[in-house]
Length: 167
Image 1: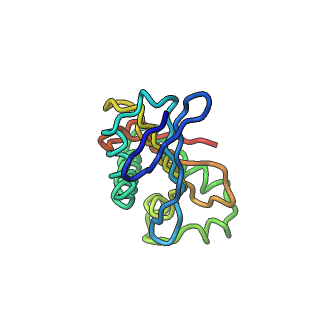
Image 2: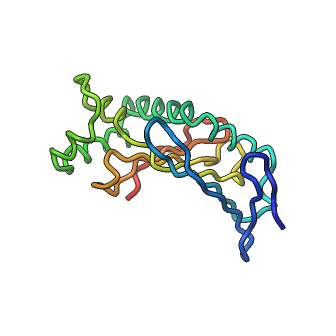
Image 3: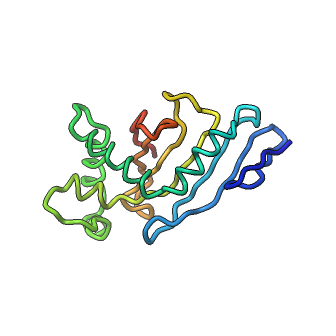
């Protein structure tokens, strides 16, 4: 069985029934990997696919919203975002860090968040309830030099559900 969608085209499934689609999109001067996956076709609704397509079409707005949630997280006690920034600033080679930080306003944390690069967006259309992780946005300060990712998980409305660091 297959699902057909105006934006994603034909979404087939593998032998186990998993639905998968991938492509890349431009964000500024960089390419962002985008994928969509679900463990089975029955759990994917046309409405969920429409929302994912709208998010892909407004990738700049989605990126901006995620970055705003990272800035908001900085003010929280035990901020995951703050810990990620501190770790990367301490562990990265200073020359690599100077190349990676494209902003210099005097506020290191904000400059860092402005400089991180969106690497990938993963959509999970089977997570269609408001508190669930509908999409995952993965950021890196220097993809060639560090494996650490700052990950923003959002719900179907684009609201942040979780911020985490992944290796």
